[in-house]
Image (cartoon, rainbow, N blue to C red):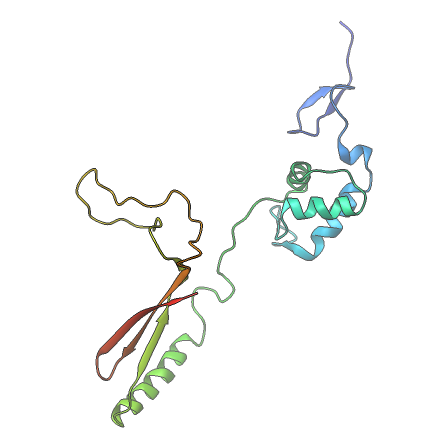
Length: 188
């Protein structure tokens, strides 16, 4: 049996016989990886020393930009190249201020002092809170409600906004001194 030379495949890194399959785009287009890395520089997140990095640009936008530079590449290929460059899909996480802001207690003490001063003078003190926009109508909502067994509330199959009804922005106003509240929904 003749010895066959093996090379790494572009897909999954498995070894294949030399000459089997298409050549990697990064082999036939020597500037592709360099141009991709240049596009990623402004949008790369993560510790440069860490093996995991990520980009805020989508594979489709990166592929469009590379095609604009004359490369023949799909968003699927960009995804494979990103994985080869140790990029991964990541969700964002709120960590900038840490677990709690260093002035958090001082901020609440300051607000509390003003609230008490206004209340002593008989002036209203209101708290206003708003929630995220929600579609108005029979849309699926997170959470559960009690219903008779086997009779769930029927809702739409898709969450496309109803242009006639719009979106609602629930908000509430609470007067601490009078212990009265008002809840409403603004339409966006």
